[in-house]
Amino acid sequence: MKIRLASDLQPDSIVDGPGIRTVIWTQGCSHNCKGCQNPTTHDFKGGFSVGVEEVTKELDTLLGQQGITFSGGDPMFQPKACAQIAKHAKEKGLNVWCYTGFTYEEVLKSKEMTNFLKYIDVLVDGKFELNEFSLNLDFRGSRNQRIIDVQKSLKEEKIILIDKYMHERNHKIEVPRKKHVYI
Image (cartoon, rainbow, N blue to C red):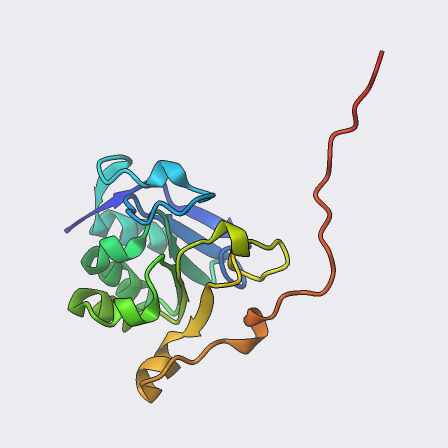
């Protein structure tokens, strides 16, 4: 089976979920969120195609990783390939996060996407909405997005949010501005 990726695997990320993680940047997304951080990943014909086995073999060579994160693009557009990779990661004892522009409720309407959920620990769902953007959020870009404990949600048949990540921090983050030098 093949998967279309936007780039090589990115090990040692500390911003795409807790701990040290490897990010799998999938290629292809039709959500077209205004202000998307990865617009080059939208084209379904962009990036490159690689065998799922190659990805899992590369995961086997990485050291010091606590988990993997699927991002993109939108991994839910390639649920079968992503499920195989996620299953392999779980067998290795890795934590699995996934970002999607679909809502959890929309994901549950698809058999293939729901199968992928079986191997996901945490789902960050919902489109990025520029008017809800905040630098004071953990692991999400806009306030409308939810950080969902997938396994508890599947078991209890209702959405269980991970509360510690859902609150906006109270302190302001200053964005550095260039100082103008006049001569």
